Image (cartoon, rainbow, N blue to C red; front, top):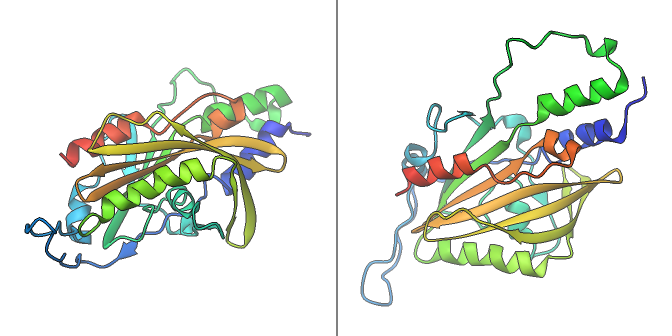
Length: 258
């Protein structure tokens, strides 16, 4: 049975945008900062154990299931463009710059099945109904949350690198994931959540097999800790429907960092 380009987008996006890399890591304890220029001790990075207590957990984001990031998705996007690298890192579920410590979680929108829905074999569906069913089943936000901590003014500098990258890479950039080439044709700043000390959000248009689809990133600074978010919604991509970084996830995470 012949499928439309929307289903091809589903397949390519599922192994591309949705499988973008998510790597945890770094040390268990942050290094001690040197003294600040004003005579006060410089901000000290939190350790991994401290960040794990602060990151969102199951039951803390209404309408979402929160769990560990699957190890099968631990392949980051790389790019030869140094100025665009902060964006590639955020779109890999990583902090925009190397940090003293980091940890992450995956928040998946929990769409409750309507009890009146009848179970139907996809093989029995006409092409149109098949594609509609696929779109509906995949129309959910999947958001990676990464907390990272920095000594001194490292967090502010890392956030500034994202703002600079959004401007410098407006025309897009090329990258690779697991040796496979990928292309982002456009990057634009988008509306950031009103959270933290400062933040920047962006939309990146990914091109795959002639189809294009948006993915979204956002970085919020809370003191010397960054909360980085990366959201993809395959169903919305297929239906050409607008979506954004999950506001419920940002709100829940920000509340834990106050």
